Amino acid sequence: MRFLSTLGQLPGTWQNLLLIVLSGTVEGIGLTLFIPLLNLMNDESMESIGPPFSHLTELIETIGIKVSPVTLLILITGFTLASLLLGYLQRKLLIKSKQIYSRNLRNKFFNGILDSNWQYSSNRSHGEVANQLNIECARAGVALGMELLAVATAIQVVTYFAFSIIISWELVAITFVFSILAYIVVRPVMAHAKILGEETSIANRNISFYAIEYLRSLKLLKATGAEELPKKDMCKHSNTLNKVSYHSELNTTRVYFLVQALPVILLTSIIGISIELIETPTSLILVFLLFMARTAPRVAQFQQQLNSFHMASPAIRIVNQMITESCNAKEDLNSTGTEFKSIKKEIALENVSFKYKNKETFAIDRVSLKIPHNKMIAIVGSSGAGKSTVMDLLCGLYIPENGKVVIDGVDLREFNIVSWRKKIGIVTQDLMIFNASLRDNLTFFNQSASEEKAKWALSIAHLDDVINNLSDGMDTILGENGQRLSGGQKQRIALARALAKQPHLLLLDEATSALDNESERYIQKAIENIAHKTTIVVIAHRLSTVRRADIIYVMEEGRVIESGTYKELLRKDGRFKKLHGHELS
Ligand SMILES: Nc1ncnc2c1ncn2[C@@H]1O[C@H](COP(=O)(O)OP(=O)(O)OP(=O)(O)O)[C@@H](O)[C@H]1O
Ligand SMILES: [Mg+2]
Image 1 (cartoon, rainbow, N blue to C red):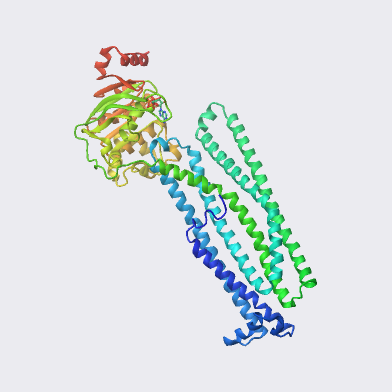
Image 2: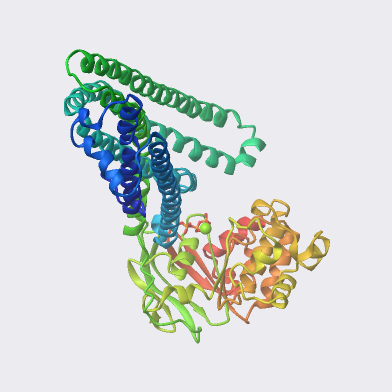
C-alpha cells in the first residue's frame, strides 16, 4: 500500500492529528523560551537578537508574569510537561483506535465468511482463513497505526521547522537540502523493505496454512508412519521464513544505521556554517540546534515508522481483498421471504439439476424425489453418486440450476432460508464436537433447550450409560473435537444435539458408516425411536440401516435410478439388489 493512501481508515484519525499538532506547538513554544533564558544568563539584551524574539519578554510581561530565569524555567517546564501530556493522550487514543480497527476488521472478515454462499466458503482453506483472521488483521492494524505515527512524526518535524524558520531561515534552507539528499540515499533501502514485507506475509501464511493442514491429519500421518514428508515440507517453509525474516530485519537495521549517521553530519555542518558564514547570535544558534536535536531523532523515527508501515501494509490489501471477495459471494438469504412454519405434506425435488462451479458434469442430473411428512426416506448409492449434494440442496446451501426444491408445493427460494434451516437437524460424517461441556454441545443449536429436553435427546441417542460414566456429568468438557469420546459416542452426541433442536427435518449423512455393529445398533434404535414422529432423510452405505425406510432412493452418477421399499427393491433385481449382494458377500 502507498503511504498516506490508507490514512483516515483508522477511527479517530483526525482527533489524533489534532492532538499531535497541539502537542508539537506547545513543545515549540516551550523550547523558544530558551532564547530569553539564554540571553538573560549571558546578560545580553533582547534587542540584540531582533524581532520577533525581542518582543518575547514584553509579551510575557503583558500577561502579568515577571521575566526572570526562574519564571522562564517554570514556563519551559510547564509547556514541556503539557506537550508530553498531550503526546500521551494522543498515543493512548492511537492504541485504542488500532485495537478497534483490528477488532472490526476481524469481525467483518469472519462474518463475511459466514455470510458468504456455501460454494465460496466451503472452498476456503481453514488454515489460510485462521491466519488472516489472527495475524493479518492484527498486522493491518499495526500498519495503519504506523502510518498515523509516521504522519504524527512528520507533523512534529514540520512544527520544529516552522519554529526554526523564525530563528534562521538560512540554516533551515541548508538543513532542507541536506534532508533531500539523505532521502535519496535511504529511499532504495525503503523500497526493498516493501518487497520483503510481501515475502514475509507469504511465508507466514504458508507456515500457518501447512501446519494446520498437517495437524488436522496428524493421526493419519502418525498411524501410517508418514511423518517424514510433512517434517521436510515444514522445514522448507520454515527455511523460507527464516531467510526472508533475516533479510527483512537486516534491512530495518540498515535503515536505522543510516538515519542515525546522517543527522550527525548535518549537525556538524550547521555549527560550522553558522559560525563561519552567518553571524547568528549565540542564543539563536543554541536554540536552533536544540530544535535540530529534537528533529533529528524524529526524522530517524519517521523513516523507521515508514519502513514498518511498508512491512505490515500488505496485510491491509490481503484482508480487504478477502473481505471484498466474501462480500461479493454474499449469500442471498431472502430474509423478506415467507417464514417457514412446518411441513404439512411433503418436501420434494422436482427435476433438479445441479453442477459444481469447477466441474464439467452435473453432480445432480434431473432428480425428482419425494420426502413425505413424518416419513423416513433413505438415499443409497456408490460414492460420488450425489447423495450428500441432495442434502445440501435440501438445506438450500446450493441453488438448483434447473428444477426446484419445494416444500408443500412452494419453491424453497420463496422462503426466508434461515427460517427453514433453523428447523433442520443434521448429523454428518465429519462430526463436529465442540471443546465445551456436554450440555453446551447439546444445546448449541437450540440455546433455549431445557435440561429436560437435552436429557431426553441423550436417552433417545442411548447415551444414558455413557453420561453416568462421565466425571462431571452434563458439565464434562468434551475436549477438542471430542477427543475423550469414541467414534460411536461422538456420533450419538451429534445425533442427540440434532434432536435437542426438535427438527422438522432430520438429515443423517453417513451417520453409521464409520461405526461398529454395536454402535450402529444404538443409532438404529435411536432412529427408530423418532421415526414417524419427524421427517427423516438417511444416507447410508450399510443397507441394513435403511431396512425400515418408507422409501429408498438408489442414486448413480447424479441420477435416481430406482426407488421403493426395501422389499420392493430386492424384488426388482436391479442396482439395489447388486449393492445388497456386495454387502452380504
Ligand atoms: N465442493 C465440491 N466441489 C466440486 N465437486 C464436488 C464438491 N462436492 C462434491 N463434488 C462432486 O459431486 C459429485 C457428488 O458428490 P457427493 O458428495 O454428493 O457424493 P456422495 O454420493 O455423497 O458420495 P459419498 O458416498 O462418497 O459421500 C462427486 O463427483 C463429487 O466429486
Ligand atoms: Mg457424501
